[in-house]
Amino acid sequence: MEIIECEGLGVTYPGGVEALKNVDLTIEDGDFVIVVGLSGAGKSTLLRTINRLVEPTTGTIKVDGRVINNLDKKELKEYRSEVGMIFQNFNLVNRSSVLRNVLAGRLREVPTWRTLLGLFPEEDVEEALSCLERVGIKEKADSRADELSGGQQQRVGIARALAQEPKILLADEPVASLDPPTSHAVMQDLKRINEEDGITTLVNLHFIDLAQEYGEKIIGLREGELVYQGPASKVTEAKFEEIYGRSITADDQLTAGGEADV
Amino acid sequence: MKTSNTSLRDYEKKSMKWYVGYFVVLALFIWSMIGMNINLERISDGIPAMGRILALMVPPDTARLESSVIGMIETIQIAVIGTTIAAIFSIPVSFMAARNLGLPTAVSTAGKQILNAIRTFPSLVFGIFFVASYGPGPLAGVMALGINSIGMLGKLNSEIVEAIDPGPIEALEATGANYPEMFLYAVIPQVLPEFIGTTLYRFELNLRQASVLGLVGAGGIGVTLMQALQFRRWAIVGMTMLVIIVVVTILDYSSAFIRKKII
Image (cartoon, rainbow over all chains, first blue to last red; front, top):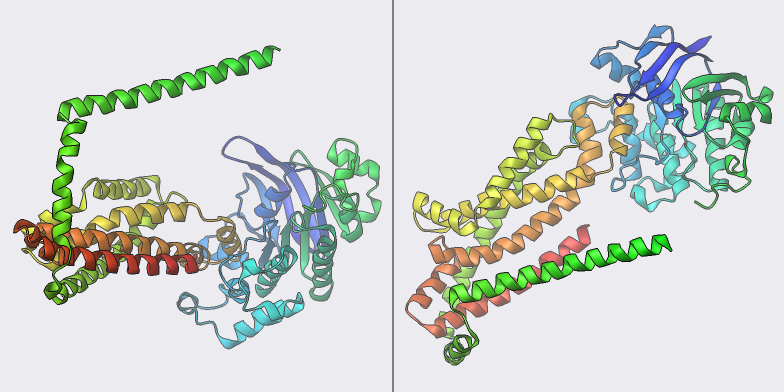
């Protein structure tokens, strides 16, 4: 069954940049999809259009059979709570505790008067802790977020998204700020969660070796246009060169050490 | 060769600007000295008198220790209340004046203008104004510091708000959080420790201001100081100065210590 269907999706930013052009896209429920393309190809825009952090200019997006282009404010918040997001720079509140960062994923579930007073019900705190346990850092719950390593911080980001109990997980370059071993660990976490919970997952990546290793399906974007959509197994180096519009270099591979040690 | 020539010429241009700058400052200085009829002779003539007055302050009049301490306690209280009032009122204005919270530009511009307007007035002007409105006494001092400090606290705090990382706000928006929740969970934790830091810093400044505000009748140890100065009771001046210096130094260090611990 399709969970995400985009038809003629286009995004033009106020400055006139056409970030997405006429994208037709289908994603099946439970898929683990890697979105590849050069920086500026529209990967981030695509993810942010799905949870409406970016407004589509043209076309429609259907999620679970419902068009989400024209949700009112309340419906939009409700919808966003079903879509978890993970960011390149983790986007944690550095000075807050790990637990408080993860509880942010429960905000929509808890009445506002309680969240504003910081009075989360016991079961929501338990839920947040169990999300931390799933990514292996429950013991860090009381630490300040900025005391953690990059890989641990990204796991807090994953736990925050999991705390939303989402149907869809969007990960925008989740490993671009991490070293190679940590990158693999985070990708394995995402893959494991996808397999265990069946959460449809879209991951933006620019490393082709990671894309091939973890992706079941691959979406290729080039200058805002969808140039490939299909199983990862069928993506050859020639196909990548077509998506990237140039020959593949060491910088496009994590193991080749392009951006290692950053 | 060509590039090195251009960069040499740029360098010469830059040093020319510096020379022009030096010349302008020097010219301003000489112009002011001539206008004031100040020369080295007149400056050196005053030195013996300074020495005599300083000598008269020692030993300080210990009989006035108690009254000086009582005056200083009032000064501390004026600074505490004034700073607290300013902190409370400056916080909404600093969020209003920040340009990165999605408020209409007209609102943040208005906020910034209010803060600029307040900062134009020196605290002594506020002091005289409130002494005239409320009569002499600590209340006038509290009002003067309270209103005057809003300007600086509001400006510093709004700059802190403008410097926050927008990432957590985006992350909270993506979870479906509402505006108050985004504010409380993504904005407040980023700014609160620094707000406390600026408030403590303002408290240090206000303690000094409060010591001086008594000169215009706005309560505290400054009242004692003003009377002693008017009647040339230098030993009493010495006593009050000593109390001010000791207390201000101690509180300065403690506040700076707390600030370091917080941020």
